[in-house]
Image (cartoon, rainbow, N blue to C red; front, side, top):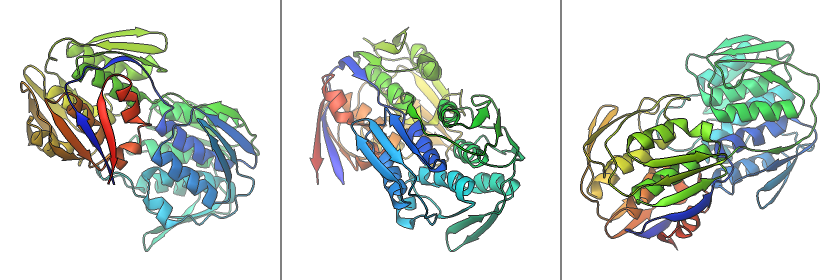
Length: 417
């Protein structure tokens, strides 16, 4: 494990560029398994989760060459559909290979995936969708075996707008016979990006971004050259970093429409936010105001930004109410923020955050990806030094975070234990 040693009290200022979206890259990489040709992905972020997905593709027989932010994927050699348990346990999104494999080969065997321990994210919606398309599912000894002779389009209603289930069913339907309709589908921008990639390789998908997605099965697909969208959660994290350090930062390579919930809440907190083309300027010269937040599926406020905003509200004037409706275990950062002097009281799935004059640095631990980001933000705003342990979690979703913040004036040193 590695750790950050952070000296607080430095104001961030300058320009920072957002990397490609992790949550768009991973399903698109999985979708490359639908092909029997080469494809090129651009804007691929250097992240641990992306490395795991690369290793998974290679394990299945693909050739993957990764140069800077460009990835060359050749899936012509893929033939093995029994996925390594070790790779599956390293990342939650590894379950996204199920849809493409069952679509292309009519067979797949995977173990239950791992990832951040932030709450229950069961596979039942994924499997229910596959079964509706004629896939036989067997679950035994922690493994899922999916097999069918003929994949047929179907009408599928998701009990919850699950992002992963929506993506997996979309990919499974690409080479199915007939039309598949997914109702109560998740609407995240990353699903729109997956649709755009699928259509570039010859699929017939429409409706992503709404609650109804329609996929008409095709007989064959072709390679493509595709650029993934910017990471809206990384962009939002940088915006909060500017606000919590009372800085002045221009965040570039963003799609402002994807950031509307974040922008609105920052403005509500008294932060100056200027939107221009593909960049956002964030500046702050005073304490933030208290705000209320309730996480919701897109286009509501993203659960992946809840910990970062909690860090901001610890220093706000007044009392903020934060309600987490997506993941039941997404408050593990609360205890760590309390160790820094934050006044936070938990009442079930609601956090009551009373702003304090200042917080102090201490030894804290990143329990998951976004909790780790929140602790980095809090540490940069603290009155002295902070050690953030287990930053390997942070590396799963942020590309060179300490380098980006140091370039803006932060004082962060990575230490290898």
